[in-house]
Length: 214
Image (cartoon, rainbow, N blue to C red; front, side, top):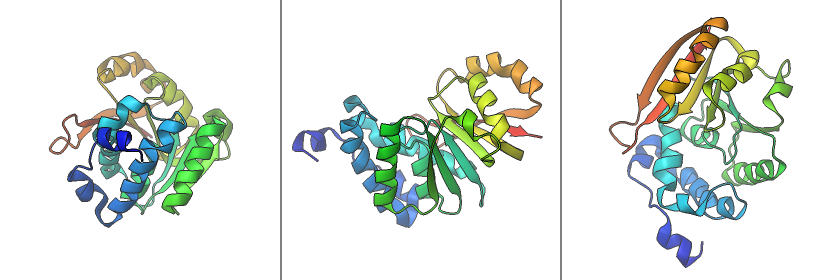
């Protein structure tokens, strides 16, 4: 990285070692990609450099605790690999499918996944609607992609029985859930359960909405 970028990049917090364990060096390399090629390729804004760990990598990684061994996770609109790549680093016991339609983003994801040697990650260039009948997941996730109603409509057709939606949400979560209440009943989903993870380690804990298929 250039000296200017080095000066503005958030240093790795101690929580990263707790979260990623002996794979923390992979998280370091991912952070390095985000603040260099990620910015150059337009996947991360320069203003995010001072909070690349706390707002992005750890905010996503904290939610990996909600996964179960053997889960097959579809990360819709993966973009810069959030939350899919932090989950793949934190949980080598699950399989992650990064779903992204934009070619440039797919090229960047392939470069990063290859560099990190993440054998539990697969990248699919497609719209989520195109995956119906081709892919089935035990978990579908998304971060800052669409409103809850849209995410539900996208997710249900590719979720297996008892499959779960784990949506990383921000301050608008209550409003989104209120708007989605009728659709949740229509799709016969169990929930919502709202999880708050990383409360003791992160200045802004991660909010995850869980919905489950019957």
